[in-house]
Image (cartoon, rainbow, N blue to C red; front, side, top):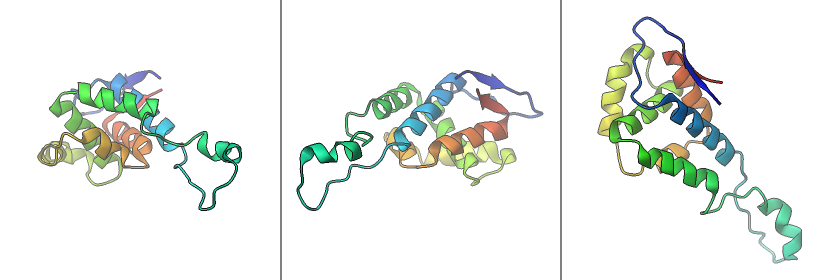
Length: 139
């Protein structure tokens, strides 16, 4: 997936690397496409349960681990921008409110940014929409 910027008047410049945001979008899609772990109420043959477990998200999920690693490698301001893209993409703010949005996202910043982001099932779509609003695109 490559990234590109489509110049728009007064478009904010992102400090976070666009390729990183595009990779986060990919990883969020992979992670959220998985099914939750389902444990049958009545014990059955373990071999009968494998189809329901094959896509189950587990603690050692590689897409989640890579997502967390990318977020953890970002500095605070870059993490704030990713959260701001989420909020903009879900319609909480308009494009002209970008600076207020950054300020609000910074005020809410925690060490658990990756988990906060992944808790949003529509994360990939909302990050994509946030980028689109600002004139950035992932191919």
